Image (cartoon, rainbow, N blue to C red; front, side):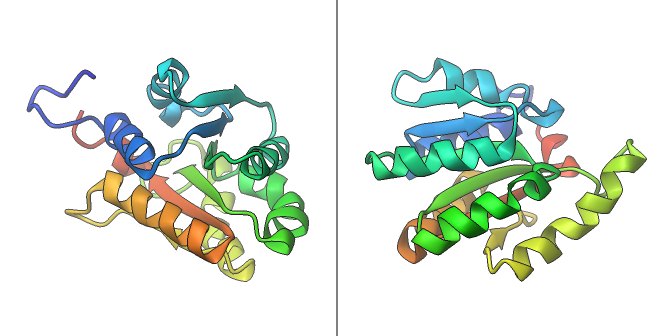
Length: 175
């Protein structure tokens, strides 16, 4: 893994470490500019099955099947895709108690250059609350890897989807 000039892990490396340390072995991804360094890391990992998809609700279904097949699933996605996946999350994962770790690039918050991302950026925490989906946000001094490990623990113990929201400033740190 490459590290930043200071020797610290990059944000993508920290997230990847959390994925590995949590034992996640099946990942579905939807492209996002903030995930552009993380997705190739996942794709190159020999112990992780990586399935790129075009829509988030497709990923929810694929991850549910992977879980039923004994895998520990996660989805790499942009928060705008939460809107695309609400029905699948509610009528599949929540209804049948299927854990899913959603690692979300949280667009539409501080530092967002695209105004069209802002409405969903503001609504994401409210939608997660409405659906009773726990979510984690990095705080200053929080190890992103530990955050991902904790989120997967909640998902697997409570048998439900859990989100980790990683806002734009997170992706710009340590690089």
